[in-house]
Image 1 (cartoon, one colour):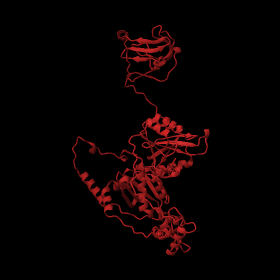
Image 2 (cartoon, helix red, strand yellow; image 1 turned 60 degrees about the horizontal axis):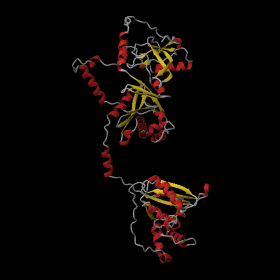
Image 3 (tube, rainbow, N blue to C red; image 1 turned 180 degrees about the horizontal axis):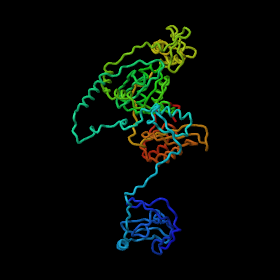
Image 4 (spheres, helix red, strand yellow; image 1 turned 180 degrees about the vertical axis):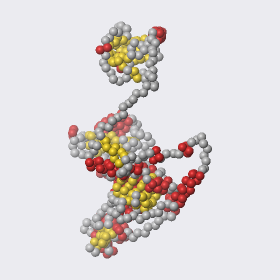
Length: 569
């Protein structure tokens, strides 16, 4: 096309083809494109990515170009249609022409020579140089072979701390191949049959001797720090409390716990916290008199000290707060192996057996209830759940209280239940209040003469059932309220018995026409014609117009039974 290369805009990202191989792009160029045949043509400027690769096509329209054309492509019909000012434009494909172009591009492809670099050429890479000078540190004073290098730019204080740290962990450095642990080649050969040789027998005897003579527990010294190792599994947790003596670790106590039901589903960090709490409860004297250093590979300290923690972690954190506990990352030493041995050898118990044993043999706890009473200034009071202290009365004082509350100056000849409750609210108590109230009410002459008697026989209430949604509605009017905008003071409410769906509307007046309008627009037009409508005996519902309105829609109008006359209409 004889377009100069300076018109190309640079692009930094490569182009990926169908083979997923990246192709370096020459640049991006904007070209005018005319699509379709006149008069239904579309002309626009499109951006093309220029690449130097052999292809049977001069240009390919991507998704961005098709989007600008607003084109619809059908590969089955080999057509592309797009809107234009004069109608719908169309571009047709031709398989014969496409195959001819492809064959021509294959014949004109020049032979390419691949250049393979000599694999024997070695490129020397310069070794990196330190940014500043280094100086040697002897981990073992007097031994010039076992040294490490540290940069000279450190401050004196930091340099001293770093040297002390390196020397304290000098035993973890491997200076020779023999210092590095590995697997005997004799054990990893698969071509050779296994043979029980003398060395195997010797190792087996040493293992039995070690297991038959476990380390004895030692007594800690006052004021020294004790170390606690934690280990967990799916069914158990265990801890080992140790002390250091002459560079060696001596066990003080072992703790193990089988996890029950919910505890087995705790997260790993929660199981670690449970192991620590269990140790603190069982070894409380050690935790109170010594500083405990917890060695674990989990961020246990940060989790327990997190102010945003919730649930059981907060309770455990408060419980552990009274002890002097420090948290350090653990190293691979023998005490951790003891802790792992305990947790791995703990056999899980069957929780079903534990539950059955508790159900079959329950514990009985006998109490006298003395914690509910208090003696204040020589007067006995009963502690109430929601009321102040209740003064305990003698039998003589109880009869006087019953008489004053029942038939005194403010007495209303209350019933048995209300009489006992009112005495409680006045701040008095004695055993058998309900029983004494029944006896006193039966002896009252006025109550026996003028007490209301129910002559209607008892009968079960009829149950309202709504088989389908929006089949039965209840409607009522609330108010009057304080006047709102438009002089609205009332609210008409309708509730579906099945779904409990509520419809409400403010009203200025509660007339029959307003009720019919609300029911038609808010119920019938939105949810369909219901089967039953239940209202109270208000005149806006119990009248000929509203009855005719419901009969015209084949709605059964029902009225509620009068339970509270003041609210009936």
